[in-house]
Image (cartoon, rainbow over all chains, first blue to last red; front, side):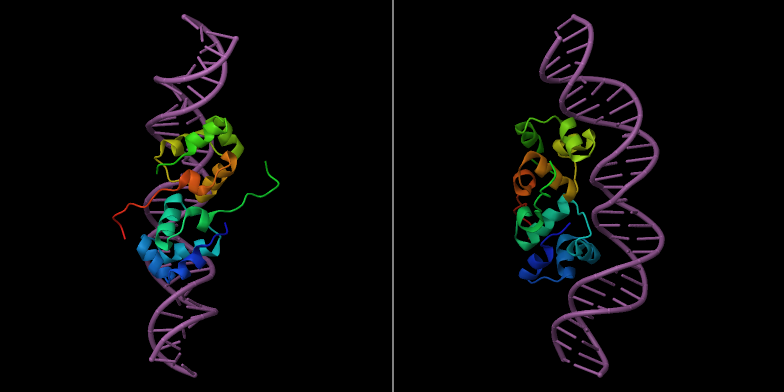
Length: 69
Length: 69
DNA sequence: AAAAATAGTAACATATATTTTACATAATTA
DNA sequence: TAATTATGTAAAATATATGTTACTATTTTT
């Protein structure tokens, strides 16, 4: 579940803690999402996008594995 | 949690059942997501997007409520 | 180098997404 | 019109996202 949360967060100069508070979520949740071992909820993805001023595609889009139908 | 799953699904001529099978999820889950009373997982959102050949922004983007910071 | 701030992670608890089973209704087709 | 297919929904079970607490490690600042 690779994503661009970390780079996007740094671009708007927020710490994990600050982003978490802004969104109303735990710092640990942000950390886990950034590490990529997580499958966050759409609502949370959207809130992250709003906080970093980017779109879903910009932060969370992943190209489909090419060999599946 | 408004979205464009239903219209996107119909555009590629899939029933809820067919989409669900393609994605490996239950028909009920698709139904609930389409009805909008649901907060699906990013992974599931992506799988839906792949199945209907659209991006996250096209299917799931919601403009931020204008009065929040 | 020490102190403070930031980030990674783990165990357990809780909330909720998703499944399973089942039934009802609407829409389509024979 | 009857039969079939597609969809809405509900209750209970299960899986998993997220919270809580706590400790460690890394990075930044003094």
